[in-house]
Each structure stands twice: as structure tokens, then as C-alpha cells.
Length: 205
Image 1 (cartoon, rainbow, N blue to C red):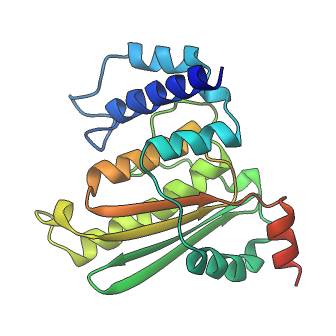
Image 2 (image 1 turned 120 degrees about the vertical axis):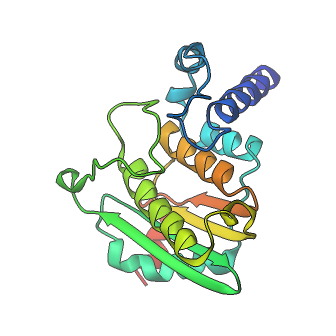
Image 3 (image 1 turned 30 degrees about the horizontal axis):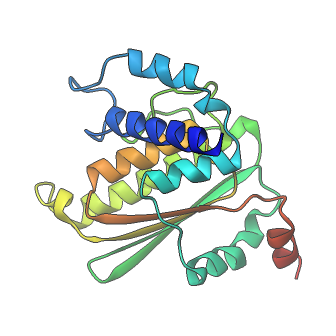
């Protein structure tokens, strides 16, 4: 059963890569809509934390090191009572740029369509997707500000992200779009749920 599940998750990862290989879901190269039907029927959207972690691994998205995670833990005290938050550190051209976003209530959901908007694999847009789309848009705008548009796809660096919720399918789609747009930016991602003992103990100190 474990081998069957692993093979199924590998296929899900391949399908997701095919959807976002161009970096944007709304262009003329969008794949056959049967891919979406397959993803919905695969049960992928119902996966919880362990399944999503395995998919992230199969998409070659690594985990950040402890220095970044501990830094996020310290700064997350301001977001402790929020519904969700995301923190991002972009390191390019010898400089680091940090961004953060939190949501305190459902009324704060930002439904604007950013350049890094995700195809709606799930409805409605979840908290994690909202905060992640916000900080990815800030990172994208910073890249455009620093580098020439013609060279932006060749920029090398790292981007580390901490999200306070299990990533939904839309969040994974957003990460894949960013990876396609900036293939030489090494992406590292980790989710730390707010209600876990590790984070609760750290933030209560």
C-alpha cells in the first residue's frame, strides 16, 4: 500500500509540474483541462499534512535550515493570535529582503488577482494561499525592482518561506509558478502549524 501511495504521489507531482511549467496558468500553453479533472479525481485535494509534505519533496522543494526557522519563530510572536501568517526571506545579489503577512479574520481575505495568482484547484481560497500569494507578489516585485526584466529569469539566489498552515493545493501551485518564473532561485519551504506544541512552547517563552 505504501508503494502504491508513493507512486500515486509521484504522478500527482508530475501532473502539477505540467500545469505550471510556463510559470503562469492563463497563457496559450495551458494544458488540457483533463489534467484538472484527473487531479480532482485522484484524491490529491484531500491530502493532509503528511501527503502534502511528500508531494513537496517530490517537487524538489527543500526545507529551510534552523537559523531561518528560529528567526521566524522569534518574529512570529506578533502574529501569534492571527488566523494564518507567512514569512519570506529572499537573498539575491548579496542582499536579503524579508516580507511577512498575517490574516486576523476571514474579512481580511484579499481577493485581488496578483501576477502570481493560482488556478483554483480548491474553493474557496484558503488562508494559507492568501498570505502566501501576498508575500510571493512582494518578492516578485522586489526582483523586478532590482533586476532588468530581460535578465530576471537568470538571477541566482535563495528564497526561504515559513507558512503557519498546511499548504493547500493552491499554495503548492503558487510555489511551482514562482519556481518556473525564477528557475535559478533555490526555493526552501516549511510549514509550522500554530497549534503545534513546539511553536506554542517557543512563543510562550
